[in-house]
Length: 61
Image 1 (cartoon, rainbow, N blue to C red):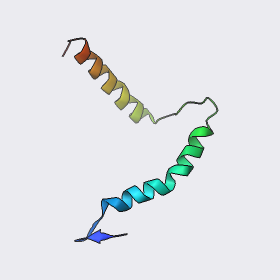
Image 2: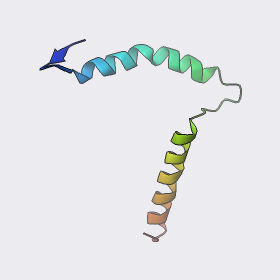
Image 3: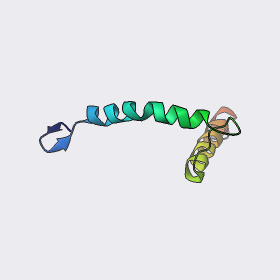
């Protein structure tokens, strides 16, 4: 891993993510119900974000 002043360079993180992408895609295609299942924490974050956006759209915020 490349380092700059003792810190990991962010490009290394992206490179690692790109190397893992084919495995992620394979996993997504292997779903029995053709849906992406996120962890409960992630689902809650998405629902909260959507609810907040809808409140702005509806003029409640």
